[in-house]
Length: 184
Length: 111
Image (cartoon, each protein chain N blue to C red):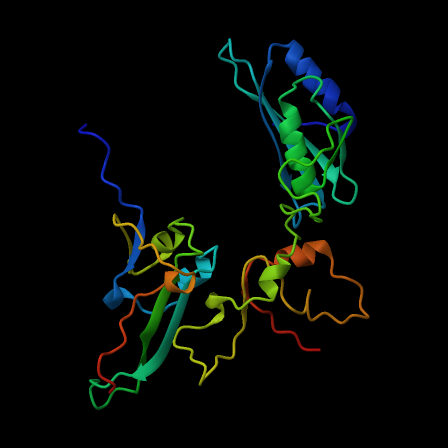
């Protein structure tokens, strides 16, 4: 995997195509929150005629303003993948197609970012919240949250006068499991 | 090869004696379709010197087929192999409520 700077992205893809890697395989994105404060856009091209290994390019973008040049002028098929990454991760592809691909036009948010809260789940009764052997007559002491819903002290029950939780903290606490003990 | 294999991923069955009410399937289910009720009961046939112990008793195990997406994660995750795929189709029903299938039969006689 070759790490590329955002400003070199388009030129790098063009030069790979000129070198015979003229088959666009896929383009995707990874939310690196928790490791680094960035989104990583990944692109794979192949050289079908020859036995060369596929080439993977990767580019790290800041989470708060992810922008990268479109490569849809080089590989028309990349436009579909770019539109998908744009709406699921909130990455802007400069010069690309800005139409929605999968989500409703009214939908707000970036569903595949790891700090995206599944708010509808927070208000629902999760069947997995119960402990084994727990009945309504003898409720357990431990509380669990389902995956996608952060710990209530991070989101939800948070003191309204406090600033919003850091996205990394939201993402970390939204993997499901026991609610943290916090003494105030 | 003699034609396609018979269908097997159509319905999920609970093997009740193997279930320990551990809740793992209900927590892993991405579509929240498994509901479990259980309670604890003291084990009666312990040697007289043993300390008192309890076990979980399954009261209710229901799968809501209107929510289930047949992913099979519950079957994969069950550490006691208490869930299995069956080749029969789930029953069509006339209302959403009837698609909630109770898999533990209530005891026929109270007590």
